[in-house]
Length: 462
Image 1 (cartoon, rainbow, N blue to C red):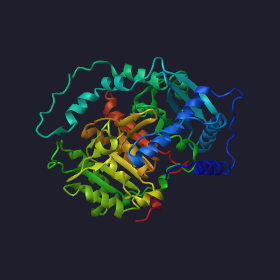
Image 2: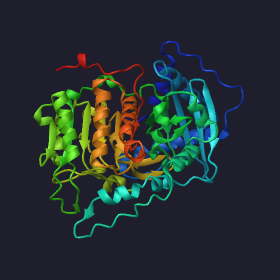
Image 3: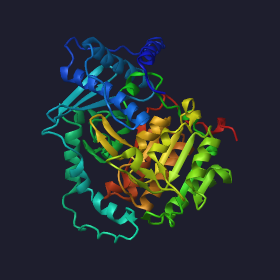
Image 4: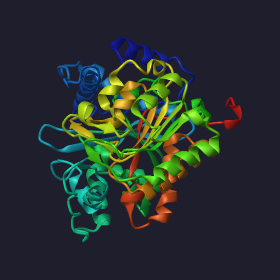
């Protein structure tokens, strides 16, 4: 449901009326005026993204906002962080790219701003890191090919740079100033409010002190600033019931008139393993020729109470027109971003599922000042609570391994999804210790899990 000004005020009142919270100590010094500009712009970005989903056109409103409202928003963020840190320390990292291209970051906890930093040079994109991780080579071997066109030869197998050095450079860019040092001394959950494509970086693999970020922090990439301020914008893991999931694996794409796709036997095994472990009814498992667009959409409609939508297939991201050009590949017709704008998912207004996109490029899309708009954000806009999505093309084997570890931690060991993904990445790192592009390839997008919420399978209906 879109967050109106009235709901924003109601949310602030609801937070103020909760049980006593830890004291929020604000410095007597005035807030960084650049932070207030960042807050102003992020409030506008969220309006622009809602318009994008509703109409297909991105248009942010004017920027004029009272200074006291912007300062109050910063205090509200700190108060919210104090509240949701009851069971797990939680920090928020706000990114903002100024008109001259410099990337600024502010790290906040329940006491307010605790670290700041600015990039060493104007920020453009994460392209330098993708080159170091050889993402282009993975894309060349797994990307679909238009029918009638020859498959392009893969790029050179010679690694142009040491990925560890570029990961350190990415850390210094995205966790500038004292931010990285502060994170290296703590652990918990990090909520990221991105700018441009900063939400599409593999934070888990970034060096942090004598370890990596995944050794200390789980990550949630936020869709908008209201997710930091509205106490109702949380995900409830206890609503997860893997026994009523809708699971799709390795659709038959051999008759796609436009593209030639590689087969994904690991995706089929992944879906079948999930169904077997949790005893899914046959109608809720769609693989091969059964995984058609209409049956997937009908499954979401008919199982409106399904708390998990699990899609293990190919995805094609379009950085120019993400709503009409990006899609999840299905048998006899694909699921486009525009399909999520239809009123099919009415039950999601009250029931916000976990959507697992075990497919390539599902976290990518068109880049705006306030973040990336693509497949993952489309599912959030349609009503999903959280989306697990990939940052680039990943091998079938690596994806299968990571997703099975994720399911183990999320649904058997009852960890919140963001923590389950962190643990799954650490497990996969043991298999691919020298290939961060394989184990750090997924991220979690959406709202943070509610404090202290863990899935209890014993309480779920059979």
